[in-house]
Image (cartoon, rainbow, N blue to C red; front, side):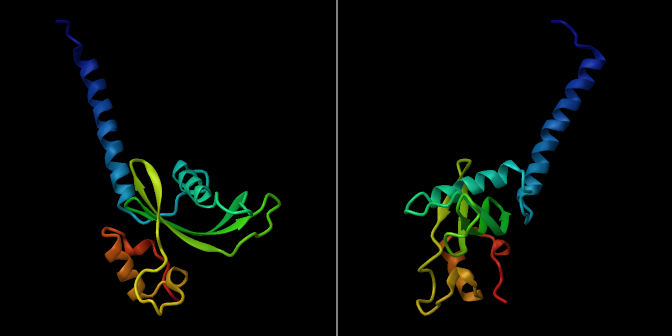
Length: 149
């Protein structure tokens, strides 16, 4: 067996440190409330999922204005305004909830949850609406949900 020498051992040690450390940084990032940067792969993946949700209907938006976006523990809450190719609004702003499953952002239902008399639900989430949502989706972090003012 050929000896790799001290230099080789040091290089392997550095490679393992960066490899393990990189995983630790990713785990710490997942454990923090964040807004993915405009040009990030995570934001693009979430917006691709938003586009998939709007594929039905006659006025399919070409793009979206992101009014709100928070991500934590593989959950994302986003509020978008759908726009046509010229930037004209084609529908009212809408909230959407996604959960990352098998590296894909999957849409989750926001309507018809909690008190049937709650007319604003996900548009202005009340504490009772948030509690009902967390009951339906265990593990959903409340900090991604915009607070009712």
